[in-house]
Amino acid sequence: MAGIKSDAWIKKMAREARMIEPFVDHQVGDGVVSFGLSSYGYDVRVSNNFSVFTNLNSSVVDPQAFDRASSLVEKTGSNILIPPNSFALGHSVEYFRIPRNVLVLCIGKSTYARCGIIVNVTPLEPEWEGHITIEISNTTPLPARIHSGQGITQLLFLESDEVCETSYADRKGKYQKQTGVTTPRI
Picture 1 (tube, rainbow, N blue to C red):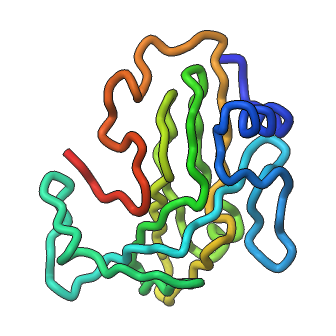
Picture 2 (picture 1 turned 90 degrees about the vertical axis):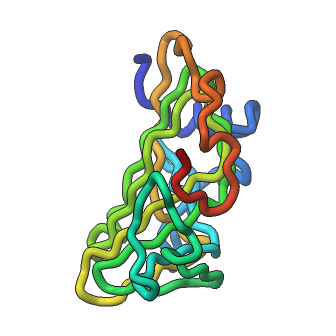
């Protein structure tokens, strides 16, 4: 691996290869959870569309037979409340096009982690494209507020010296070009 990429490389790729759209070329953080370009990464914003897990219908969560209608409550707004010890899905404001020789790791932001809110996103593979579906877990016994349009996770870009043999696009990955909150697919 050539290593983790700097803000200059990210800025160049965002402009020349449309890797991140819309792209914020500086860190925005006055009065909000920060987002935009950082020294060695990019802080992604969460959109205003959320799917909150509910036990209203006593459903079973099964990735091989996921029933969105009975498992999730759809919410749109400037913020949402995630119930105690519960979970929600959101998606990034930004749309991504990952180069063939790049792997992206997603790390939760410390502001949320310090509140007991854990963010999980699987790696963005070479030649994956789409909005990121963001898993947000409230591990506390209290309701947790998530604010739309603010930072939720940081991306770290790892560039290889050579391109991968088989990319996500080559495999025709099931989450290629996803938009909005995307639930499990088999």
